[in-house]
Amino acid sequence: MEWSDVRIFLAVARKGSLGAAARTLQLSHPTVGRRIRALEHDVGQPLIQRHDNGILLTEAGARVLAVAEEMESAAMAFQRRLASDDGVSGPLRISSADWFATYVLPPVIDALRREHPDVLPELMVSSRRFDLSRREADIVFRVVPFDEPGVVQCRLLRVDYDLYAHRDQPRVARGDGGGANLIVMDTSEHSYPETEWLREALPRARVAVVANHRALQARLCQQGMGLAVLPRAVGDATEGLIRVELGDAPPSRHIWMGYHEDMRSMRGVRALADTAMRLLGPAADEGPEHS
Figure: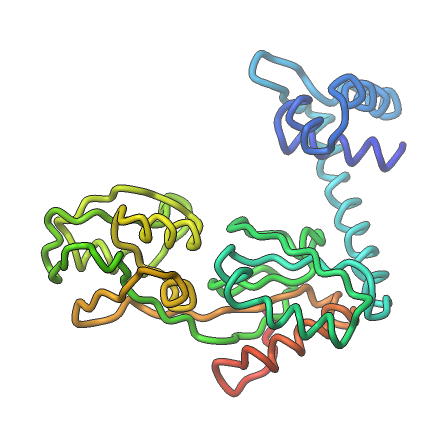
């Protein structure tokens, strides 16, 4: 049984179709089908059933999936332990939201590269939550604490938000908002306290645009398309925007930095974590925490 075939089977099982797995793995559809047949030959039983909407696992396929996930976990742990022995060099995968990568991280990355020029930062700007146990990212910055097992996390700077509008926009009053347009985050999958605050503060305002990138929200706001709650680092840096005072500010949040405990001795991760702690500063007098 080839591990490469098992990896392809995992992708097929998770994506629900050969085509989706092929796109994820950047392989051809025939190659994925051929490797699944090879794995079925090794196992001696069919693992998937094809139907119009994709595939279903057979009973044997479900059993193989459980074993395959155990193999994957072991392989990922092996890779993390190997990576932890590396020097301060090579790729370092960093995940954060767009606004944080654009407005906050650059001085941290610059300081890291000056001290460790052989490190290659790979910035993955996304709102998706990467799986640290599978090394989808080496280190993650986000506004939500980590609850995944085996993650070492530190609380960094506090993020203050304000309501912003283009300077030519008509003024609004708390408790009303009639005639005003709002630019908000999509709350269907994640909770955004500042968005809930905005809707409560301006109940008669109309949601005009939903955009899950703060920098994009700022540009839309700059075009006069509506009001947006933005991190001050974004809103204050965007020409033409002014703060809108409603008597109280949106709730603040904190930036959390996390990495898998198996990576704590990876020198690149440690170097970035130390640099971030030094430049961004902890929000409280506390050290790393385990989740």
